[in-house]
Image (cartoon, rainbow, N blue to C red; front, side, top):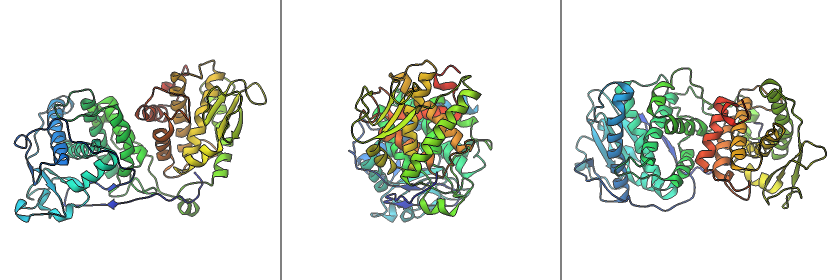
Length: 465
């Protein structure tokens, strides 16, 4: 949206390109969390990793690789109609700060110098190169990821790179961004298999899924990167959406949905002022965009889709204490019996808005759109105070966000990074009882529901369509 400058703390920005490798870039951000050793480890003789130590990171990587081999051996014949051929070039673990050249006489993947692997991981396939069809990783870098986002992140990196190995066997999509997000989708399909208890060594639980999506923020391209750029990987929304697509719908979805017709939300800045402000309007202008765009969207939605007439609710702010009509002491409020008329009241805390704005202007818009969607449900004669209502409101907010993205509303314009801010908001605040009433939905589930509304419109949003 229209714009003010915002700083993002990027602690580490790294890229690596080697021959015909699928090189992946990572940005390390966030707060530390505990690093744990895996509960059970596969033997090194089962999955040999050149240069590996007995440390927990190599154990995590080896465990993930063992289960990835099992998963794709099982699924590949059904999905692609042929047996899965194991990687022939092996796996390579490197600490670039402590390299013994004799450990890697032919280099690592595709003959790459192990010193060039610093802060990265990659799959490589290059005809005639040594150690082709292999995965290499910097274990010190994976340890840093684990310290910040937990043990799930090194496993995700392995699953993504293994996805590139699958692509090498069946063909790559036509663009870099489709190639990278398809690998994200394949990682999601494997993660669902592990989360269902099928992995022999890898372990992923519900809390890991929220942490995993938070960690995906470091995998996105810088805001303003064009989707057609040679090394484009995708926006935060693009990558999370692809991962959840694989998680929800399996490897078949990864095979079928990454052709030329796939739409990506990543885009370049088209105006100098948008670029200068990082894609964010000042907070007071953001509040004006909320006041204009939500009534415009819902008025049209009722006329064009819901076969009704929408009456905009009153929209107010408060500081600290919510309106007297609120049944919960929360930052985002919908009251059916509040406001000046009989159309209800939507209210939000100005302190909350200032905090959410640190994520970006569209994070604030996303937040206020939730109680506004509850007002629409109320006018449709639907519940507004249970988990199903909140789930529907998140889905409807995804539908609204799609109309902003598609530029069908006259009162608001999308900016690069806006939809990333929606994902951040839902993970940061979506199940915070101080923002919304208590909900049984995880952050992962909320993002998935938002994505459904964005991609499919009102259909999955439980409003009778």
